[in-house]
Length: 357
Image 1 (cartoon, rainbow, N blue to C red):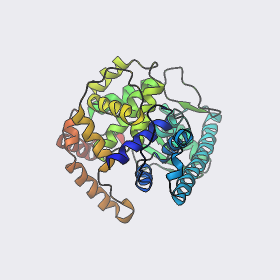
Image 2: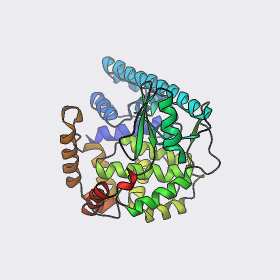
Image 3: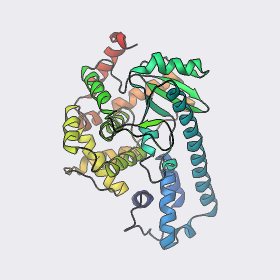
Image 4: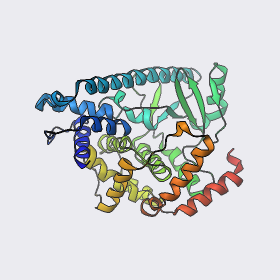
């Protein structure tokens, strides 16, 4: 098990361009390695690493031929899906641009541009923010142009476009029931556009600012971790933020914000794991905490994941609550609140915080 973990980290680091200490052991459980890489959302990055290592050591010779074909085929499908999503996203951006509406891209689609090969960062949807034009322009323009728009969730609408689901955010965070989250929301809105935002590639999609990414990517990962869990892809995302923005972010200010909003211990642990798993250099002093790293990494690799496809929506919600109770230790170790306070705020918010609906 540990041998497979070590090899997985070597492949990820090699996929991100780390060329030292990348030799693989003589015995590799390729099937288990493939399964773990796929489950963790890093199979394409690992294939990049395998191909780099193969040039030096010929490691592909020991991989079963059928598995090699399966691995390469899955990455090709991912590339094709990404390119189709990118074309659809560009089309939506051009539509909004024709109405004078700027579209800022966040999370996966935006982060993919930080990767050595953007198409090797899997994306399931596209998250965007239109600033103060969420409904009057954003949803209206989509509807008037024949797109399906679902506005049933207060935080964001869903726009369906040629196989791509676009989450058009009214709120960047789940803010119901929490005054602190609402304050954080207002700060994030001021950070997303720092006046130097560039268009991504040849599109009219605007990238969010480096400081926004450094805060928001971590906040989003923490929310995932506390409520369900993260996978290695989240650690890779954070590693690319650290690597790309090493000299573009005021990391002392970042620490101040993380401390204020209960993310600092999680941010430190994610940064240490970005170094351990992806081989990136952390651009700030990061206190050592082996126990926190072990708990976060074990949960990432080995937590039980339920198959939502075989259960009703109600059963999914019940299992999620059970999982949150089982993992209440996460709130004690990686946030500034406890699980019961968190649940209380969420329940109060959905029952009484109706102004956001």
